[in-house]
Image 1 (tube, rainbow, N blue to C red):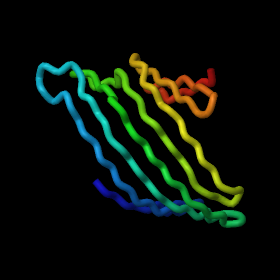
Image 2: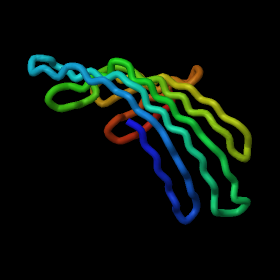
Image 3: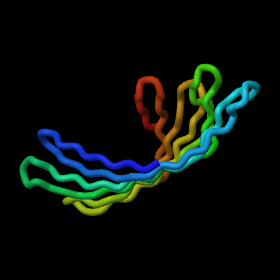
Length: 129
């Protein structure tokens, strides 16, 4: 799949393009989980409409590995994703890579460098460990 889009809000504009490629296994009726593997890539630019009208760009890459969705509830039961976010802005360049590990029971951990965050997948709450 390919996509492109833009956003024009009161304080910010952005333009984005990207691709995504996924495979889904476990489609048979006797499989207990769907298994998802794939990639998501997005490149974009933004411009602020306020103050100094800063601008910048960003790239996001997500690689999902054996993400398990339970049947029939489709809750995330396991797997992982590697997430890389890089770009530039007025303050300089940035580059972050993290590993998101799905633990089941609506919980995941995100590891960035040596920092670990516990994430509640239902509420979005995030707590540094």
